[in-house]
Image (tube, rainbow, N blue to C red; front, side, top):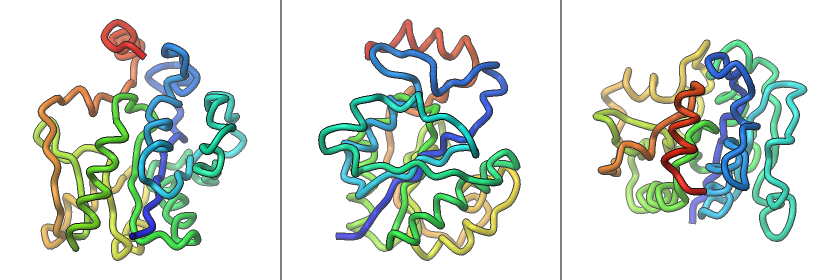
Amino acid sequence: MKKIFGIYLAAGQSTRMQESKLHLPAGDFTLGSIALKQALISRLDATFIITRPGADAEWIHSEFYHSGLRNKWKTVEAERALEGQAYSLRRGIEEAEAAGAEAVIVMLADQPLITADIINQLISTCEEASQDYAAVKGEGCLQPPLLLQKQLFPRLKQLKGDKGARSLLRADDSLQGSFISRGNDEFFYDIDTKEDYQWLLQTVSF
């Protein structure tokens, strides 16, 4: 079995929301904890939560500190997080490499409808094929979460600014990928504005 770790990007500044998205309540959870729980109960070996320097972790649900979940996650500060997503991704890759990762799954903390089933499908695809990456196709394009194989790590660490892993996959047609199709694009919604947040509360039961 390959060692596969999650990289949970949670270092954004919530500029459009005008307050921390991660701390917003959603049922018994916070917005930032919803998808994180799915990562923790999935087949991932562990998940690295990438944060800004000095950011508090109060949004992480208390149950994640207990039972068998505590050894499934670790917070990691990205010193250059404010310079763009590429630097948070780089920090996550570095942490995963140190842990012996053979692949990673990159997730966004503001995509609360991602499920453990989707994560596990990506893992199964990775185990069954030798492609460079595995991805979910939604809204006609690649959507996070993305599974990225070890051979991509050096190139991912070269990204700069606000470029994420998708920019690399789009730019190089020689890269081979496996794809999971999902009929419901709501799985990929990210919560950026107060209107998005209200839609989430009115539409989803947590």
